Length: 261
Image 1 (cartoon, helix red, strand yellow):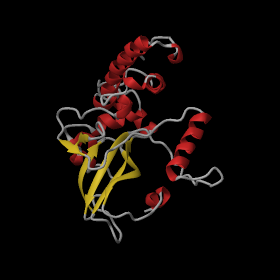
Image 2 (cartoon, rainbow, N blue to C red; image 1 turned 180 degrees about the vertical axis):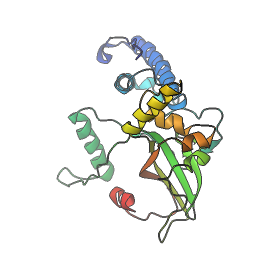
Image 3 (spheres, rainbow, N blue to C red; image 1 turned 90 degrees about the horizontal axis):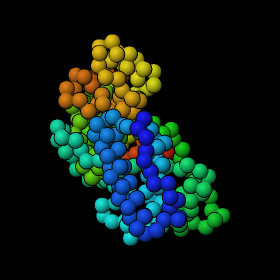
Image 4 (tube, one colour; image 1 turned 45 degrees about the horizontal axis):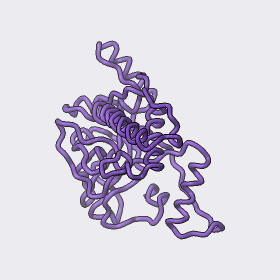
C-alpha cells in the first residue's frame, strides 16, 4: 500500500493558514483515491488509511467551516462516471453510508435521529441492523415490474449504465413478482463477490497471466464494469438489496418491512 504523507499537526492546534493548506492538500489526495477506487477499481491505500484521510478532512471543515464550499468532498460521494459507459441520471440521489468508529459516534448518530424525529430521551427507538457487504453500489430501475435500467452510483447524481451486464447476474430478477408492484420501483444494493470466489478468480487470473484483483470489492466492480457482458457473465457475482430510490408507492413503512417486501 502507498504511504500517506500527512501534516502531523493536530487539527485543534492548526492556524487558519495551516488548515487552508492542509484542507486543499487532502482534497486533492482524496479525490485521487476516489478516482482509483470508483473508476479504476485499483485502490492505492487501505480502507482504514482512506478513512483516516476523510476523518481529518472533515475535522478541518468542522473547526474551520469557511473552508466548506459547494466543491467540498464532504458534500459529494463516489466519483464521476468513467468514459466508455453511457450516463444515467439518478432521479433520487444515491448517497453513501456513513461510518461509526467509536461508541461516541453511535451516540451522536442516535442523538441526530432523536432530533430529526423530535423524540424525547425516554422514548425508545427501534433499529434495523443489516450486514454491510462491500461491493459496487447499484440502482436497479423497474417500470411496471420490468427491469429497464441498471446504474452504478457514480458521483451520486449520475452513474454508469451497466444494464446489459447486470442482466447476466442470476440473483437480479428481470421481472418483479407479486401483486401491487409499484409502477416505478428502484431497488438499490451492492453487486458483490464472496471471498471464496474472489480467491478462485485470482487463481484463474494468475494461470492466464492476467492481473489479479486487490480485494473482493474491486474484483466485483472490475467484473461488472466490462465492455463485454460475456466477461461479466463468466464471473461469480451476486446482488444484495438494502435500499430504494424512486418509488411511485411504498409497499411498507419501515426499513425492515421494505427488506422483507
